Structures are given as structure tokens and as C-alpha cells.
Length: 318
Image (cartoon, rainbow, N blue to C red):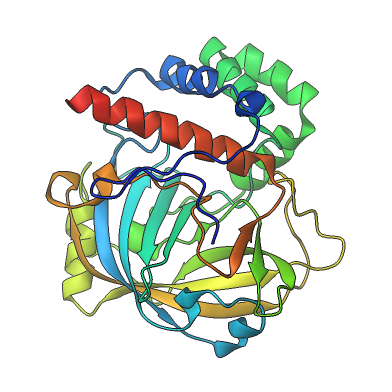
């Protein structure tokens, strides 16, 4: 079980892993978010606007047990999730297309913890934390700085070209597909490791069912839950030989083996003030038995900046 950091109200904090703490400029990264978006005191600096969704994760295709002995794939788990707009604006409009996020804290039937943090991006614009901070600073400086960064970092151009060509139809959270972006390793009973990425795909055709306005997403998901249910399928994609595992800016292409490993069914949705998700650190390195981190350097960067962010945020609420 790999749990490098955790900060959740009611649970003890676990220290960061024994790696070089200066491997990522945590304070510099945090400051870059604030310089770009502003200071949203007492709130997340990224994915600032969101609300809580609670439900259950249940196993689907038992074929996944060949690759992982995670308890998530052996019985029902409870989930406290958070859906959000990507970015640090405190009040982005729900009725305009934008990038979104879905994060989940999963508590298995044997009290193992697993955290998932996903975005609607199919892959990341840069390969490492240093380049990511540089990108944030370039965005803060304006268009010319971003152009210069893109010249020096071809991965940003590939990211922009690909994502710029995607369908921009407005969809609610429950009608949206979310991607892991980072790679992970599945570990089976024999200790064998398999590199994977995953996504959560809407199980049904949940769409917009209430009048749209700048804050209609919560009302919409509540209506869809009441009208028959909201769920996403966890689809695990097994890496092919030759796939780049440790660079989140490289997209996997071609035919891959996919396993519908589990289904997350939402039971209720509520504002952050009424739910439990606001005080959860959705650290993607909190992994249950049967999973391990890949060598992707962005995983450690995300883990460290999330821990710094929640500590800062909760202290501002005191």
C-alpha cells in the first residue's frame, strides 16, 4: 500500500515520502498559481469552484484481478468525490464550455484508501514539474511569453493542437469523460507490475435537464440522480510495449486492451459547505494495495503541492 501523504479532517496526517524534498519547488509552484489566478483565500488555488458527490464504487469485470489485487476490485467501496472547474477562478460559469475535474477518495470495505484525481485533458502539456511552473509563469506574463515557451517546449504545441480540435459542446459533469493523465502500475498477487492509464466514462447519456445558468451544474446532477441515476465506468487501459509511461505529455495511440474494472455510482451531490470533500486532500499518490506509482515525475509534484495547498487553505479558515 503506497500512501505518501494524506491530510483529511478526522484522519491523521502522514508525512511525505523519503525523497529529496527540494526535487520540486513547492512554494514556487503554489505562488505561480496565485500569480496567474489570484489568491482565493480559504479555497483551493486550482480547481477552485466545485461541489461534493458521494456514492459507491463497485467492481465490474473480474478480468482486472489478473493484473491487480486491489480491494477496490473485490467489493464495494464508499466514495467522497469532488467535481470542479479547472483553474483558479472562484466563479467560472457553468453554462460555458471549460476544462473540468473529478477527484475521488475511495474507502474500500477493508478500510484501505485510494485517491484518484482526473481532468478532462487527455494528456498533459509538459513532461515535468519545472516546465509546468515555467508555463504558469509564462501565462501570467502574457501571450508573447506563452508563444516563446511553446517554441522551446514542443509538447505544449501538440497539447494545444489536439485539445483545440476536441468537441466543445457544453456537457455537465455527469456527461463528461475524465482522464487520469498520469500513468500508474497495477500489481497482482504475484507482484507482477503492469503499466496503465485509466479514464472514467459516463455509463449513460446524462445530459442537461434543467435550465442553464452560471451555477446550474449542481442542480443538474441532483436532477439526474433523482431521475434514474448518475454513474461513470472506470476503464483501465493497459500499456502496449513501446508506450511512454513516465511522461504525461505523451499520448498513447493505437489499439489498446481496455478493462471496465469498476463503476462509480453517485448517490447524492451537495455544495462543499454541506459535504465532506472540501477538507480532503486529493493526493494522487494515495494508492491502495494492488497499485504503485509509475516513474512519472508529475505525480510527486502534484502530491507535494496538494499537501502544501491544503495546509495553507485550512490555516486560512482558522
